[in-house]
Length: 268
Image: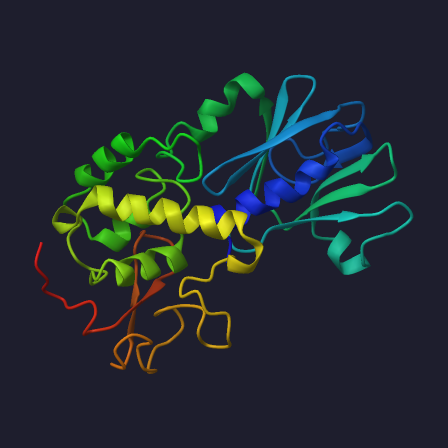
């Protein structure tokens, strides 16, 4: 599932085309659909949370977001995408070395001046994968969300950027917190420190990608996520699950927890 570590790894993969000249290409989605991109040189890729920024040498940026369905792929010279996949392309960049970069099924495609990046990113909280990470500001925002639950606060990208449903559930388990614990009752600094360590490890260690238990065997990669009705890997208690509507108008998301390791009432 696309979370901050997913997009961080994607940007690292796309950096193989940094410095390449776009021979021809276009946007096939978003407000600027039809915009020709030929003649620009790719100068870099950056991320903020789940947002990807592709920067060009004419001081413009392509801002995209995967949400749940988007992806990127690169075809080598002389190779083509399958017809069905090509129909889902929202970005096409054919490079001067013959490779082509494709953005597929992207729900957000926006072309803007690089100086205007804060317009699309300014509402986001500090990125857990940025160096330095502004832990003081993230902690302040988390504490300001005291009237909501910890799972809802952590999923809110305006509080801290990069966490998705998988990481929020696993973090709650590792901190021994019931997902619906009030945010005010949580040690914000300790939670954010653990979140950064886990996300950074997942983003930069190939064999550790979204593995939270340290075990890579089938059914053992996660402490609670996807384990409803199965025994907790730590204590053997049956893991429970429940769907939550965190944001009005969005599909419900599931939380998983161990009733013993994450009691509904715990010491502060």
